[in-house]
Amino acid sequence: MPLKAKCKECGADIEIPDDALPGEIVSCPDCGLEYEIVSIQAGKVELKLAEDIGEDWGE
Amino acid sequence: MPDVTIIFDRLRWEEKELFEKGKELGLDINMIDVKSEPRELTNFNKDPQIAEIVLQRTISHYRGLYYSAILENYGYTVINSFITSLLCGNKLLTTLLLAKNGIPTPKTYAAFSMESALKVIDKLGYPAVIKPIVGSWGRMIAKINDKEQAESILETREMLTDPQQQIYYIQEYVKRPPRDIRGIVVNGKVVTAIYRYQPEDDWRTNIARGGKAEQIKIDGELEELMIKASNVVNAKIVGVDAMETDNGYVIHELNNNLEFHGAFQATGMDIAKEIMAFVKELVKN
Image 1 (cartoon, rainbow over the protein chains, first blue to last red):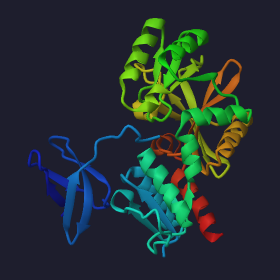
Image 2: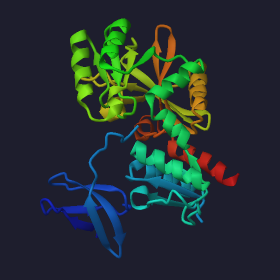
Image 3: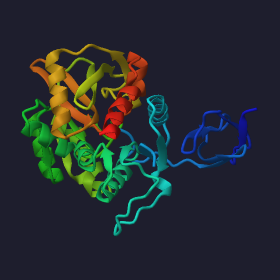
Image 4: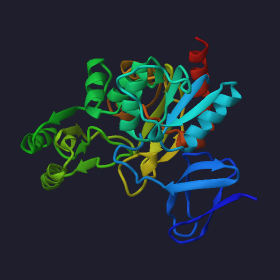
């Protein structure tokens, strides 16, 4: 069973891929809100809202 | 202590790929999110959780730049180095160095007021190109087709609060096919190269803007130029951007914060493995 988290915005289930790592971004499949994975421990995943794209991001 | 530490702030496909390929090569790698690890600037005791070799992979230019400065002062080897990130991350400094070292690059001016910027654009002729000196993904790069556009773009830039927006980097518009060339140079070797075709509704070729990648085999002349350009800024892992003109190639940008997902998809070249094989060499030494 893949790990799941609830979207704080719309309540939809966000599936966490098996190979996900802290620092990775997951999106709510319903409303598109992006979350950053804070930790994955003992079958529990902690998410926080992802940062907005910064002016100095990327190449 | 691990062999290699990857520092990041957002874990993208690239960082995971580097981690996996490094593991395949037998490297013990850990990853540190710079957002959650503050550093003391007045004490240089090394942190046992950081390896001697650090691969800098933050998505934010400034986070990567300053974290590199700190870790280098602690005595770590950071790839790319602070000075490489500083030089590549600033188009004004990159252009100066390319030109100074005899690498063909588009004719470019810096202007320090709106009035003198207008004069420079008039002198260069239309269309001209204006770019922020620090910027990425092609954002706020504008092709200026006439004086009216020039005035409105410069007026907008004057209103922005970031003082760097009032340093005007103005470049000739280079006549080229609807594409440019991205070479990926790792430790002085071009590991792969792609055309980046501009999308139908944009003149910029950035993959992040919808540019399409296609593998190419570059000729010896361009290969030599790309390697020379990477050496000018002492970049160990760098994306070198070139354009084809009627008078030969010009190099217009060096990207220390290399994104290579698009190039990997277009070429199948295992860029992450090439990078980690180089990093492994550093660990051995």
